[in-house]
Length: 112
Length: 112
Image 1 (spheres, each protein chain N blue to C red):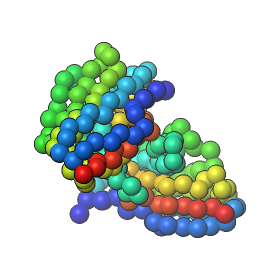
Image 2: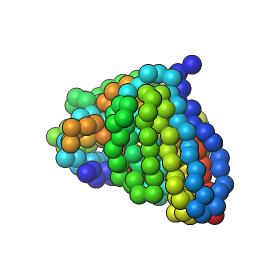
Image 3: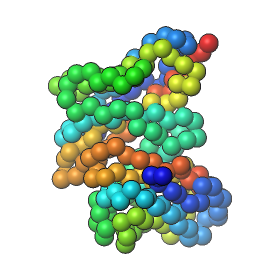
Image 4: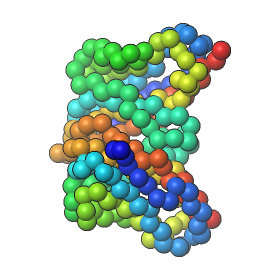
């Protein structure tokens, strides 16, 4: 089954404790992206990747890192999480960046 | 950058027709997506318009006017399960990449 898988789905953590949200897709997509969704603000792009070893900032990259060492994986790293990073995070992928985006189920992160 | 405007909320009756409007301003335009998002779930693809005109897909249709920076999503024969947020997402072709920017979404409530 074609899918985008994120882990963990839910996480409560404390300020400053490094965490990684993993994202994996099995569709051989070149393009992958991370979004955060907050009430009243909609979906905002954090980082995206056009292909392996090619990443770029989205609209709200501060406090986040990403890497794209393999085509299927695009982890989101929070080196020192803060409460303003409490949000619902979505990973998404598409074949080339111009087509339909397929979303993961989302990861709800709470930073205390 | 992009400026996307869509109504925050709408209410419609089961069996009726509803039109959700979206206006946008982009530096470069490649096409426009509509996504559906049920509360707490991932967005799912509904439609994609590149050329001016109406695209029909079952009970859902989407219209685009590139010159006016305007699109709408038309939902016919509304069902209770259509209660969801509908996200307008113009695709920007500027800066050599294709980036989707999402509107804040229109929350549609379908009532009996």
